[in-house]
Length: 330
Image (cartoon, rainbow, N blue to C red; front, side, top):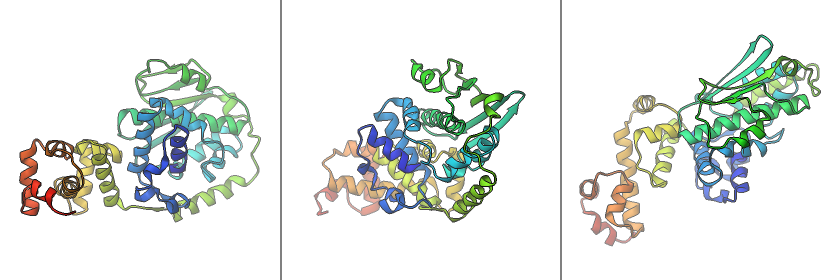
């Protein structure tokens, strides 16, 4: 997923090299199929795409840049079963191969003569959630078309978000005008004739081989950062983007609720106040010594109410007021 998002950034005219400073986007990490970049890192890439490309329409563009084979064994779980109901249900049960299972919820439903896929992304920046959910729906549809070998059209598409100002691009991408917004959930509905048609790539016994391989991949996969390291990366990234590091904002990057974030910090023997104090101390020293930013701008960037509050904090940390640190050698 990280490699696909970096390709999408490049396709949008941005330089992916701007993200290699992140510890879980190093070349050796990206080359390792068993390495798992953190959720905040992937959210940062989505934020860049939403901000600098076409807004939430980037979800359609990203799916267009992910042909069959992009996601390894997961793609073939989706396309080699006896029919779409069996293969999609099996593949979506292994969604952990693609993303963070703590932030994604998915279910498949056989409803009379219909087959429905429902998907929900956890809390994050609203535009980012919208882009991810459009991408997910487009990815399910693309794999369904590749699995059946036909340009099947969903009977209905629903989204949780509000209708966009212009949704022609979604009508063209999904091939239908039956798109509803402000729905209780995101969903993709297929007619029974499409969902039960035999898949041309189906081979007897192949699904058992793929399932065993998927289990082995998950057992061997390894996160690059532990939970506390992931949190600190999210906090640093929030500060680096000129954004005051509020609890809600960092929780959005982690795709969890603020209450869960505070609880997890307590489990790791720390607190929001301690962590924000530590990162402010390091960032304040860096900005004071290495930049010509006015003290008022530095205070605002670090989330202080005014310069005096920052001055008191710097004096407490270093025993000197900020201006003496600026005069000191780096």
